[in-house]
Image (cartoon, rainbow, N blue to C red; front, side, top):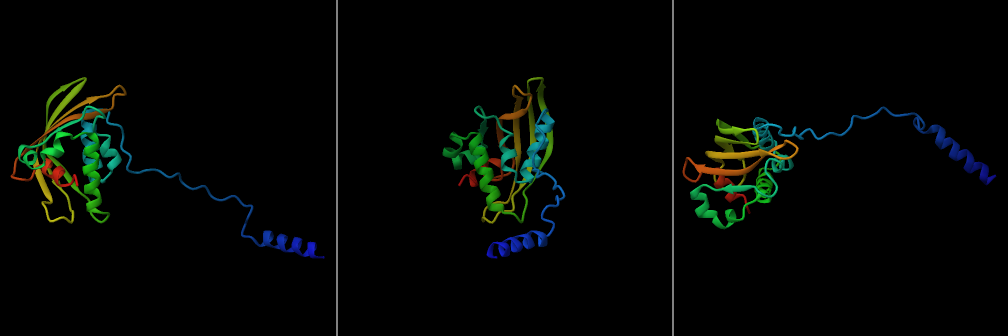
Length: 189
């Protein structure tokens, strides 16, 4: 009798279950809506630069720079202040400062980046150089400057897969203590 009672109870549970053996509707696949197209041209690289920065997308921002040969030349005033930091600056330093800035900004705000002037100073099939005037606004909670302006020269080249990346970035101050170098120096910690 006891065995029959367990059998009836188990059968009842199965029958009362809400459509236990029905198939469910398929779900849409999970996608990363912040993955950018590979930079197959210098202009696409510049677009990815602005987009990844404004989306606070650390992974995509890191893809903008060459792996082993990236070099950042800081503006003179910032170099005088943060020289030890800039002596060994590389692509990992680039991602680290940006990660620190994104963490400081938090989820409620977004950084703003605009290239007010973009001029190609040299373009060949295997390299390009752009001079850009920029305005960067970082809504952080530190007591330091939130807006940075200046001029940069960005040197870029494609890799063997024809994906362009920046291998050299030279920054210039156009307003006292307001360059991208200053921004990087402040957020290395």
